[in-house]
Length: 76
Image 1 (tube, rainbow, N blue to C red):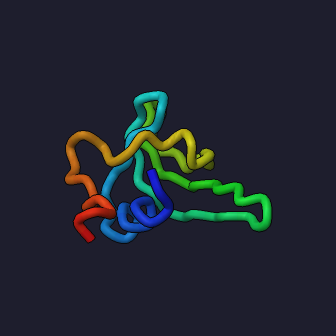
Image 2: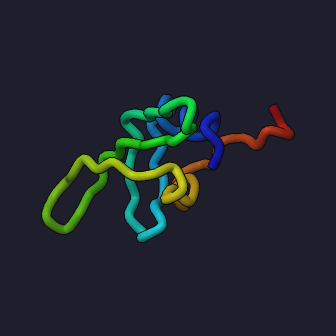
């Protein structure tokens, strides 16, 4: 998922799917330069209750299956 689409999911409050199957909402995106390392803070529901977690951008698969995907770059 690109940073552009990730920010779109955050502002539209769409849920995203993590690589471990959890569904979460993006609450913050931090990119460190010049390393270009992106850390995403997500709010996820867990069996023990909701939790705030920081994950690498690579762990986000895409929009959650029950939400509408952001438009692709070709359609913009």
